[in-house]
Image (tube, rainbow, N blue to C red):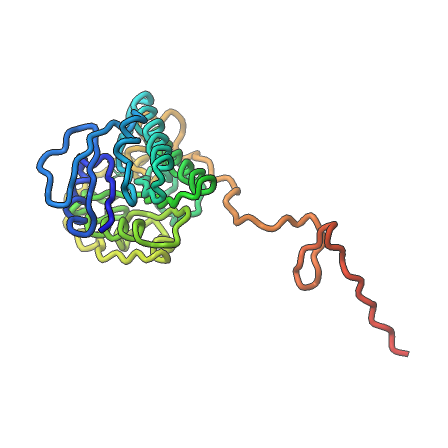
Length: 306
Ligand code: 15L
């Protein structure tokens, strides 16, 4: 049985996953807070993500890491910097030094929170963080990309919506993930043998989803839950929200501390197209690109019929 390190294991998401993954993996649970009441198959390894020595100790000898640790909402820059930037770096670097290849990174819907609710986005969109917190999640994803390319690590970034037993409000009807669907997604991240660097959305199969989660499905994710089952109940207790928060996917994170006019949010730059072969040469009729090294073969002009 594989041993998985869960950082930030004392939090709510950690609690759901401990229950859902019990018996499937051995769990090493790490958090800055003490973890009490260990279940069979669990061990505790207390550690502060901001301390490299702690991360080197807790990452030793595991098969994969699920990095939930750090600040899980908007906060002062000093806290985000310590827990989510320094902490994330320490985690990846400690994993690399200890030879742990597989890291599942708990990214967030707030990495793309400045997309509008009338847009459907996939894993290839340009990030549009809605907060310092969202920005730290973009940092974590890009750190994962660096460690995958440079050191051959296998990094699975899950842009998690909101983990709860039932969806809490109207916005969450689009981004909710049930604990058991999250456990399914985590299992894909741990077990799929062909992961180098991937971004997926951590959401259930919600009818109102703002995400095209084809990449997760391609990798084997089969969510079973849909927030719609709870929609009548959720909408009946919904109070009218702030129009600014209603426009963007990130909700309240978007308009917290907002200074400018939120209707003027810039469209994403056109930089996310697929890389192409350099077309610094001419193309043959078959579409082959000719560079200086591969000159065009002279083709004889068809002779005119006499
Ligand atoms: C998140 O990323 C947070 O960790 C969580 O606390 C929720 O606020 C969630 O997003 C959300 O958007 O509902």
